[in-house]
Image (cartoon, rainbow, N blue to C red; front, side, top):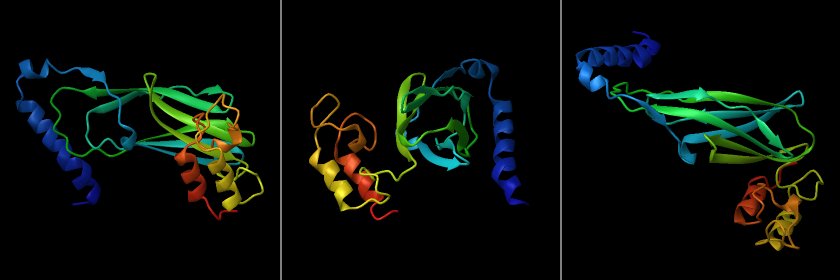
Length: 195
């Protein structure tokens, strides 16, 4: 028996057989409700090809009976990009045990050099965000083409500042959340030594 048949065929057959023996009165209680995954269930990855930016979204929810009815349209506000998708969960009887990840790719189009933030939302509620840089390395705050200790020190010196504060500098806010905190230092540290 092929692995594909084992992976999909047997659980699908089990679902059909179980569904056939459930009384119609029980099945009538089944409805679709809004589902907002946790940030741990969502993985975001940025990549570029031929000067076009892309975001891969992976929903690894772990159980079936989830449907994405709309991935949403990209909304751009300067360096902030966001989408508001619609995800639904089937409350009825669901005996399929295997749920492969749900994948989608957003085409961000041409992006000028700069620091951006992509926010993945479900019906207007933010689930996860990812900062990314175009034309330089994330964490290279002095734009010399490398992430070194001077970049990390510059971020650390502005630690605790926020948008509107005199010490706040947008180029030091590596993740674009309008606050300079330990996560900005950690992002730069992850890219330490990259050129």
